[in-house]
Amino acid sequence: MHTKQSENVIKLQKIGDIQIKVAPHHSLNHSKGVISESEFQRDLEDDILECLKDQKVIAVRRITIKRNNQNFPTKHVILTFNTPVLPKSVKIAYMNCPVRHFIPNPLRCFKCQRFGHTITACRGKQICARCSLPDHDSNNCTSTTPKCYNCNGDHPAFFRSCPRYKQEKEILTVKITKNISFPEARKIINDRTPKPGISYSSALNSVVTPSCSQNMQFIPSITNTTTAPTTVTPPSDNDVITIKKSDWLSLLEIKKSWEKTFSTVSETCAVLPLVSTFQPTSACSTASNSECRTSAPIPGISLPSATTGTQSNKLLAPILFHLSPLLLPQIYPLLQNQSLPSNLKIKRTQTH
Image (cartoon, rainbow, N blue to C red; front, top):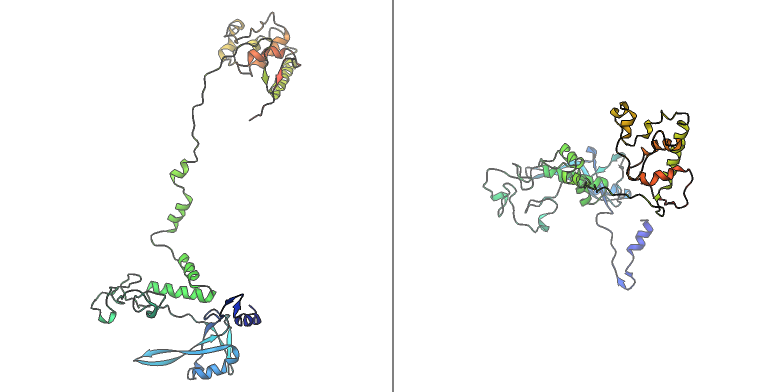
């Protein structure tokens, strides 16, 4: 938000008829950085703050270490800026000091030994930091075997190499460097950490390979749809035959092609196509013509013989081999003419 807009928002006292109070956020509008310069190790904090006021520094704190109950100053100084964006460097006297992010240590409650809060905000019960047993503290602990309350390891809860301590430290690092909330940073770290007992290959197989029950639901069921053959009676003069127009045109094309092919064949050579069986065997091809003609006749049709039939009737016989036996009694009389009969109705049906 623009600086002038921020100043106008802070001055607001009422929205409509509702009284309000506007104040800057206590942490989101500030940033903390660390400088490490041995030249300023003996300088006071107030002197450094006075030198950095014009660089948006509002607080200075030196990091100290405790030895033998005494605090010793270090060269590390924590600077607090009144801007959410941390500057890359600051200038003190004649030196340009680089600024890096300040990553604090994880908060651990001295009462319940959990991370994320202090003893003043704790609502849990007393847990020993050394043996992780309740109702006493580490100063009064008599156990000789340490046990961490957070990771169940063989070390006290204040051990700096504890896996949970390192994880909390990494969460704080992501939170500060990416300028995100603590729950968002925790989610990022938890997604990076592999779950115990689950390998990459097992997790991959569980995703790629579906279960047997999932496979079975996609298999269609097969039912027996066989029905008994229907009996077809020969049509009378007033019967109406309904066939596809495309099938009728195909039959006429077959009839014309056979007439053209066998127009020069003699009557004696045309006996073979007059066989009324629909699946001729090799034995029939070697048998005599009379034996082949004694096969079972087509119901409802008397085919012409080789000596008395006309040339057109003999040429129609090969067409019948392509038709179902149930349709022959109806189709054969109609194939005598190339034109459609007057009493034939052709119904257009959808081809599947």
